[in-house]
Image 1: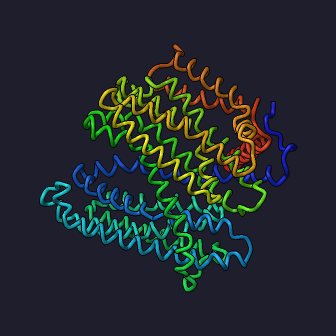
Image 2 (image 1 turned 30 degrees about the vertical axis):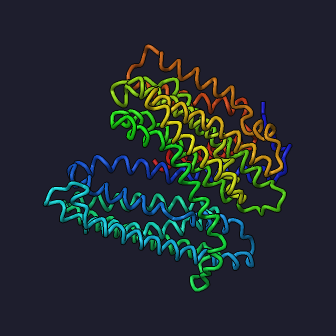
Image 3 (image 1 turned 120 degrees about the vertical axis):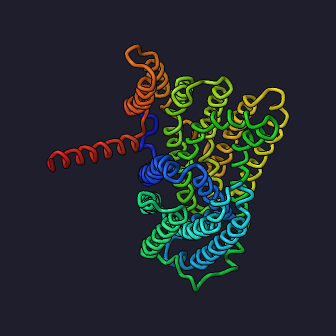
Length: 523
């Protein structure tokens, strides 16, 4: 039975729902390629560089990534204001803000580079590098800092693409950055280059991609890139919102990282390892949710707060539904096959690791019900209540872990993490629905309608595959991981999918058939 009928909604809302689905699919392409490239590159670099030189490289990359994340919410400000600017006049008003924010981001990138250079001078001591390797710290840090400046430029440009909802172009840039840099590193290592030469290849490829991105965005910026119109006053007017978003980002990060931080502080490195291993796989799902939220943010921002809320309501309901489609099958497979997953990955299934694994999965699933709602609230300018709730959740996690971990161990902290999200997601959902004039229960019924039966089918098929006598070990786990989500998708399309979801499935099926036909004809 079709739970959400397209005929029951305006045609524009159905079109917006289809666009959101397509944008989400496009926005995951860069994540998939980037993840595969990064995972494949690590063992190759360790083998060619050795553990100590790779450690120096990793330290420079982690430091650059951390400093680059201190953007004070300017990227979100750019995306939000670009998305809301419709028409030539509105774009002309936003252009000075975009230019000023871009210059501010460039200034932050240069300041981060100076910090890296300052830390590079003492890197041999705080990284405990051997004498021969310590001499390479300064050039490696300097070149990684240069690459970070280029990547900050890319981040500024892609914020404009996000606001314009050009997710195809945005992920083309992400794929190019991952592939070109990896290729440069691989070629350098195959030629027997030193770590400094690898850093040169890394920086040069980053600058090349940044230049190509600037050309691409300049052709598609639609009047937003006018450097001489930079306005500090316009930036100052929007800076409080950016700082609120940045504080919210830090608070949300602390919610997820409080458990490992408090574990190492109160219980030692052994507990940290157990928490890290238990959360490593489940937290990958938060990256998938973040990709959906990145699509929802400009969609909800693009409609003025004084509008009727139709576009934002569609973003809320359809975005939450898409997050659940990504999260539910993976969560079910993880919960049913926890021991098998840990055995295949680690060779053992420690009880504490298994408990943290399961409880973190539940936390991720609970968060999936409210993550898009929080994003919609941010996009609509409701910064104060979202920030207050996020910081309250962070405070609960820190104080709760401080009291629970010494007595009950890491598993209690993971349970608290799940409870925080079980309590927080309904609050975000209710606040978002009220802001958009939507009854919370009606909105949730539209978002989760038709998902119970596919979820049960996924659980039954996954459990059956894990008990099948004709497979064993990794093959059994891979079979369950493939058949469970396949059952979810099949039952969803048979009973529960929206008209937009069915239309998208037909389009993908037709595209795949044409591709296979083309390949067959070419052969």
